[in-house]
Image 1 (cartoon, rainbow over the protein chains, first blue to last red):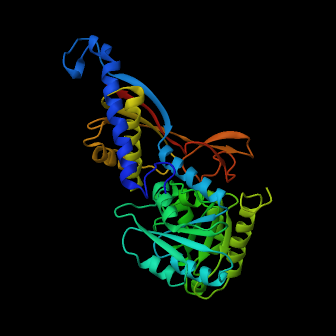
Image 2 (tube, one colour):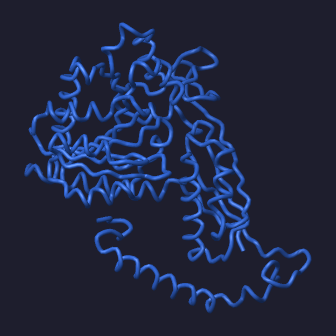
Image 3 (cartoon, rainbow over the protein chains, first blue to last red):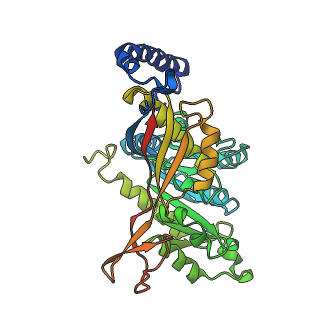
Length: 280
Length: 113
């Protein structure tokens, strides 16, 4: 299901309609504006000195208008069904999938969970998630370096999400491109692992600015690294004042409770006054 | 290389606007790109030429007007020019600053036929 573009389950039908429409429009235009031919034909045929056929049209639009439209539709769907959606972003190898599998196990079926996995190739991550027993769908972006609102809209339809559930979107491992593309999530959660160095927030400010929560993962490796935790947090807050920071190790389980509590609290918050809570 | 996706979005806008604003081809597209936004102008030009091929904007010129970054320093109570999101106030060295300008990326206008 894709509420904005109308494509999806009924793919063939959906594509026939726009084709018919654009065809008709094309004809109308030619008939409606014969006056264009009265003036300089410029590049269309006859050249008249001093007269240019080109004109300036004002657009005044954000480049991401279309993506934002898809994202808004997704957000509306999540809100309608009281679904908390978290968009997990990081560089490749920061531990997103391990964090996810450990999180799913620790939440222990307290509420329904689904996962959208984004990678350029392979379904490895979705298989790792499915092994925990939750529903997962893999989006392969091919050459694409990020998920966008449209891809996620289609995945939502395929997942048939339950009301009041939790949806994790594991974005393509990349600290640059996913920053700009809103998917309709409630929060972007950026995961930074300690071997990456404390200056990552300054090197990739857009991503850290877009996130509401930073998870400092692989804290179990701190004794072996020259990593300044305080400097890292200061760098993150320099880019995003007020960003929340949690330190944990998904592998050893240290610090996981804070993360689980943050998820539970965010979910409770998303349910208050929601259409499915019965309190409206 | 999200510049490729952004260029695709620009071309889609150009094609969609063609029926609304009634034109047949695009000669020039002017963008306003904030210096604090996630866009690299070089990459944008490179991607645009590739994406525009065989579209309504095939061969069109892409003009990128850069919009300087501007922050608000709550200590100085002044607007100050910044180069990065995390820059401190050049007057009093305070940070973080409140971003007031330079993080947007917009299609301003198009020269069309």
